[in-house]
Image (cartoon, rainbow, N blue to C red; front, side, top):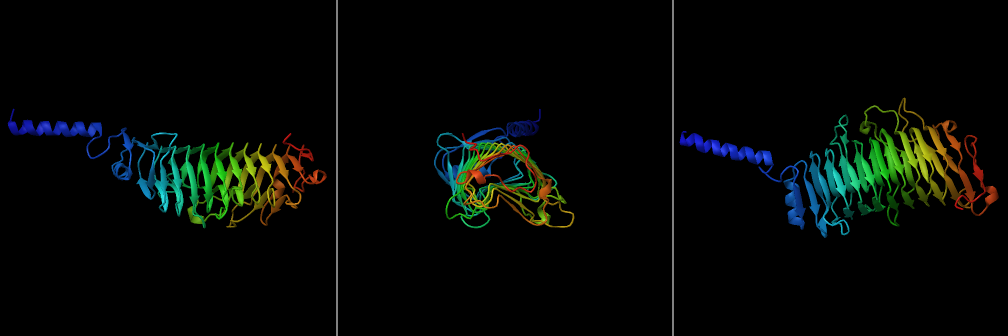
Length: 365
């Protein structure tokens, strides 16, 4: 064999082997990468490949990271009992168009914009799928202005589980055009000095989102903002005529705040099995904030089998009803209403007749 040809063949085989193993040019696909300090974190982020699992050792790391277009990426604590803390930066970490992303047992704190920013890269007709957030702790975001613990734009089939968000300026979780997603077993705790408007907000054409088994404590003016107000160019899908649709809030505990939940530009929702404790002004709000042509009025909400404990000295009007809504399409059934300071005045004034409600008996017993 020609010597030159032989050498060329050997080089070609070696390079092909590198490509197959994923080592050519950085971290191997499917590799597990250990990070122990800021320098190794930055190096790992720069060289990430699809399928990588990034394990981060205990300690404090700067925020302000950006990852784009990777699939099947996992970022998690090396030691789940001692999660790494990402402190500061505008965003703690932004992941754009990262399908099948998993973030597990991480902390973010002190960001001036958003703790996490997860988005579709502006491709409104190509949602990102398969994101899982598990065991995250996010705190002290903002503190003032529309800045979120977790900002979600154009995400489908997302799961947020066992996360705690404490202190934020806008929303703890803000979902714009997100679909077929689950938020479960999470905790939302408001803090003085933070201008929190909501804990969980589903707007901009969001649909089929379940919020269940969560605990809200003084979690903004509207702990659950089912719907909202979105610029018409930001809806996903484009041209949607509702802020939210088919949203389910079930088996949550909601303590304090100006109200427990607001229904805003929503076309169909379920609010059931929740425990509401001592709202400060209203129990619910029925509002319309987007009034574009052909946009649906707030309608078709089922409020069923909730335990509602309040002080009549705080709540003179149970439901704040705004203009342009259809409260007559709401359905109330089996709710248990109890005014602790005036049990005889527990029965609410509702826009429709309630079926099988209970009034004046403490549902906590």
